[in-house]
Length: 331
Image (cartoon, rainbow, N blue to C red):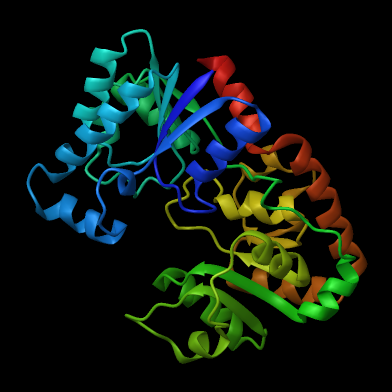
């Protein structure tokens, strides 16, 4: 099957993993196009141009539509949340027999100008059962549940013995990602209770906190390096975005797929994903997080056993290949 993907080509993005899995694992013919392929300015300038220049996004996505049509795919997958509805309309007009679907992996605060809802996709896939229900019952959209996943070709545990790796990495608790104010406040409270935390990613330069800045390693981790750091840390602390109503972030799946030990926010839906009672590795408040950090730092055998069991279970059940097999069967 020939499949066109409209979305970012950035390494470790959802679109990257969809394209990699469809092409290199499932052996489909993939045409992947992003904004940089049709207009040669940095992505961040495209972002502001779409917001402040009338008809700019319509112009860009008209060019993307033309390239997709020229490829004559059997299926089109939109991933950008800001694809102009006219782009989808033009593709449908010219490729009448082709299914066009949208996959939205983000929390419900990231629908931009709601272009997704204004576009006539044949099917919609999203990760939160709350928004699946809303889109189905309040907008009559053909919407399916599509949880996050991980890519074992990128998020892999490597060959180094975990005990040796953890001695080499020498991190008790690690956090990673963009340090938004809500995340900074959470880690700040953890640090104030005497927990040594190492942070990787993007600091909050607008509202910096000294204890957060002092804990930053000034490194953004992806690919093999991310796998090395996460599995090499004794505990990976994952606090979800406040807009994860009844869903988990992609980190939840990557951390477990890598074989790292994770403590994360409690969400009832996590039991659907896990082979282990979620009360073991979740917290409902900061104090419970601190208590479990201290407990698992003192119980390495139990910690490593949980991580290993989760890794095996997630490899069997939560890869992009597993997700995409179900998606293709649905459509």
